[in-house]
Length: 435
Image 1 (cartoon, rainbow, N blue to C red):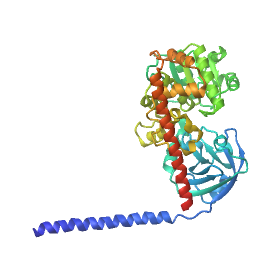
Image 2 (image 1 turned 30 degrees about the vertical axis):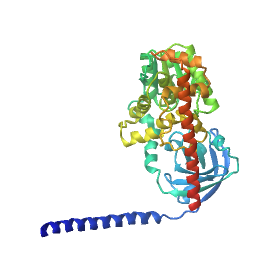
Image 3 (image 1 turned 90 degrees about the vertical axis):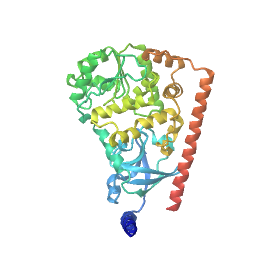
Image 4 (image 1 turned 135 degrees about the vertical axis):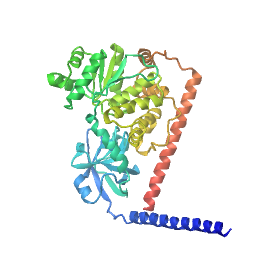
């Protein structure tokens, strides 16, 4: 009996000592965090807007970093007449994912800092004016660094062992041997291994029509004149007028870009397949376009995600299910699906909680048809023709009950989005008030 009591006391004493040590360690971490040196907030002005609508600030990157700030820090940005927002400081707009609101130190606005929302026009969203004061206060030290490090990998797609990123689109009910996607078959980035492989595979697949989302007609004309800069098969297709070319900026809800998407789909309807869709590396602009095609063919969201991420598996050799894979997925295709399901959020992407699961209950085919009709401007007839052209399954006409159910689901998601926006803005105000 005494022996049992002794053992119990020993265990309790061990746990107490361990707990004390852990508490002490936790206190040490907390203490080190509270000792973070105070850095005076920076007040800058919007000095100009670049071609993408990003707000170029009056503070240079060197001045900002000389004050002690580092990429990966999280800042509270106070924008006049808009509120306070928490954004990371990154080296490139890609390091905060699609639709990410960031404080950027990138070459496109060098040597100045910029406020930018990836794939969205900052100036239009905020209706910001030149000279508007922007207060910048550091909120968290290096909190975005782990995700930023992973996302920085996506800027190095050309280092891949599979540079062509060529594959057939087979998701859903897509017709066999009709739709393909790849990296660019013309070498405007001076990567011979990429364009040579893409051109060869396009020839083998007997591609007849191409949608180029990376280059203008003038750029292609210049490149095809140089025999060393484009594949011979691509040159032939271009000479025959079988290449649709328009340089999109990535703004999936911008008037200019949706007009390009409409023209591209109509071009495909006027020309025979097989079809090839490409941008520079075949992963972003081409990825969104192919997502729309797959949705028209009845693909599930899981199929679309897997195909979108295949580009990163091909070109970065990352492992499906790894931390890198899941991080990139969360910042790219997952956000695209949310924005596609609930288009209203694209008018205030800076206030969206991208991890909330918004839009999960809206079927992909419904979201794609709605986007193509209401945003891109295609008629119901054109959408049905696209489905008939690309899918083995004949599109069915929605009955009144299905339309009512669809509209109800969409309204519920929009209400949810508005509530989330109000909650986020309230939380930002509370944090600012406590400061």
